[in-house]
Length: 207
Image 1 (cartoon, helix red, strand yellow):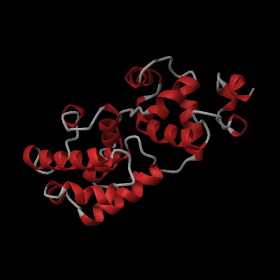
Image 2 (cartoon, one colour):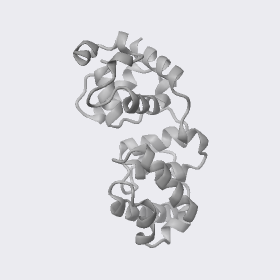
Image 3 (spheres, one colour):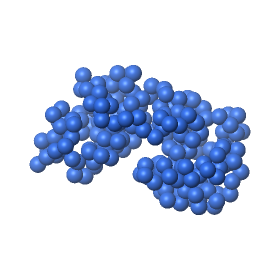
Image 4 (cartoon, one colour):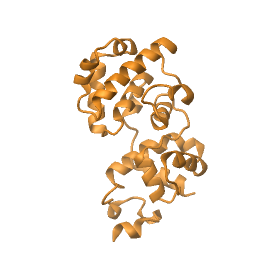
């Protein structure tokens, strides 16, 4: 099966990443919110800086938005995200006992949390078998011919059909890192790609 072969090859190249060292669902949630439309090399330092000052939902719920803005100002839309972080923290305290919910229905009720963010939390914080689809995963899945879809939501459903369930939790991190290193939106590095021999887009891309 093509999907299994893709995941198998990428797992040989990419070792477990940043979130494998994190066992705090709240940290994963806030970091994922900060990562929206922001590169990892900016998101990770900003998250670490934020948590050194405000290390819990209670601390963030009581923070001044401008103080959080100063700590996360390198990420995209930092003013909006500052207020979302405070809102999310307050809701967690008031409705969930300060804990991050481990189901997509409740996660989607949090401000600024869409399916991609919710599924990232379920994958990285709770190790659940879900597929988090962002722009990298959507683009690469179509390039590789795993799916033929027009939206990330369609891609999520399509991948669930072709990727064995025990591999779902690996899809996001592997394809995101592959998309950052090799299969870039513009000028992908097909000449050094470990999937070049099974990629239906390779002839077009190497011209």
